[in-house]
Image (tube, rainbow, N blue to C red):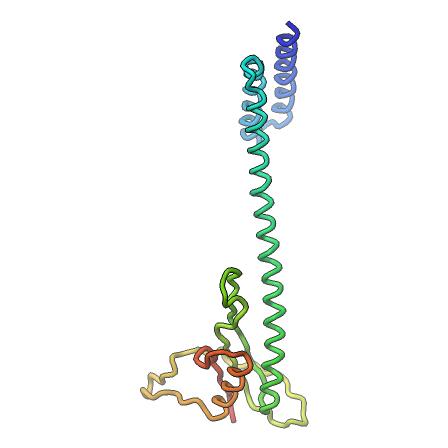
Length: 203
């Protein structure tokens, strides 16, 4: 009789609390979601004596805890993955700036100034080529006077093409300076020259 009394008391208390909560929510958009959850809780309260009678309450607790654990692990994995992606992007940005500084110094040694720079790196953690530079795009110009500080000037956006001048149907032959700088950068980063696109303005 004691178990039946506890069951009826828990059911009544829950119904009273649920009624109060639903009235407090009013016309809130969350009311339907709370209603679904409260219905599931009520169902568990109603059937709990039968689970105890059949000695299945331990099994129910096991599956509930198991589902809670899996849900928590999925949330944790998502948070961890998001953190790894943010850290990876931050590291990628630092490496890119370091490489940009190195390229700037190499160009300066050749009397050139870096206008624009971009690289693409392999960011696949499972790849053997992780961290390798897959392509590099460089736009540079000649320094007018080595003794005078050079200020960056804005130039029109450079359109990368396949190296063919469609108007005259003639290939754009790279200058000796462009070939020399490309070789220098290719040796320094152990890159295929075909993956380096360099354009030197002026001269």
